[in-house]
Image (cartoon, rainbow, N blue to C red; front, side, top):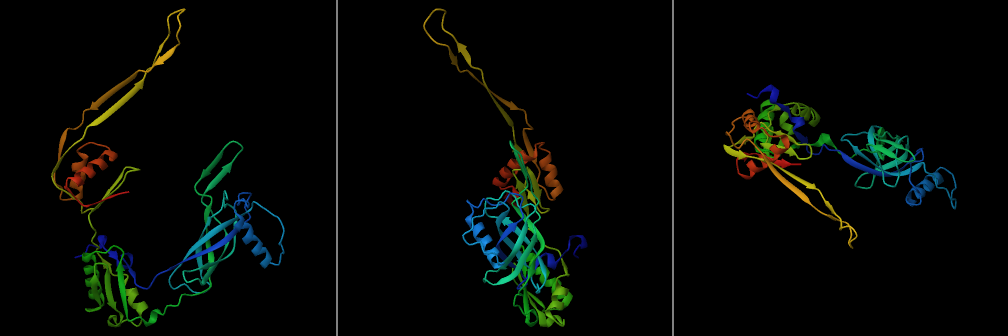
Length: 352
């Protein structure tokens, strides 16, 4: 019996083959900046696109010299979601590519967004919202976050739809985000139990083939709606993840440690410089010199000695055994590395 508290919907475990988004990108201009835009001598492409925009609006600037500091060239990116329809809205991300100091308060001018095939699928325009803060004075500059990047919520309008006839599909594949033979077998069994035997068939550790015709649903959309809400208990590989920068250690519930003995001592090395000044005798020829003198002290603090970590059958047993060593989280990371090297840690060890 699958425990309800540990079960996960198939929609949270797998992707439906063919149901995917598309990445969009464009090159545009942000205007209305408070003197924090591109220096046009260092970013001549900003001046070029600004001239093109003004000429399209009927303003002839050929041969004119103007170098405002309130415009910035940006790269605009967005993701076109699956089944997006013309007129729909999507969020866009704006990032400066020149030497602009900040995009705060700027407005993105109409920017076409193209996909990998070179076709325009959306157009973006709107006020840029940046999460960074910039404050500048005569003697100091304070920058918090990244003021040279921001978003335009619902700033992109879909102009072209992706050609994809979903209604004509007779089979569809479920692609597990984390391939695992046990999880794939459980998904196959759960779909067949919910929709009828022979509907799903496991192809490999990450793929389950679903026969839409055998589901008895009127359309592929109805079939996937029923499949994605079926609950399955996923199986995960035992894994230990450590972050050396923050000293964070995360263990999965399937981590096991064989019986092992661990010893750790803390060494403190102290170096002190105490130079001595030597002067010549009175009325003699010579000069005052500083003679270096270095004091070195190596102190070994008493530790727990050789500690025995019993083999753990549960995660709580493993944690209790490691905590018995009485060391800090950062020292624990080194201990776990050594236990893994000794072959006593039975889990995938990931260091970030």
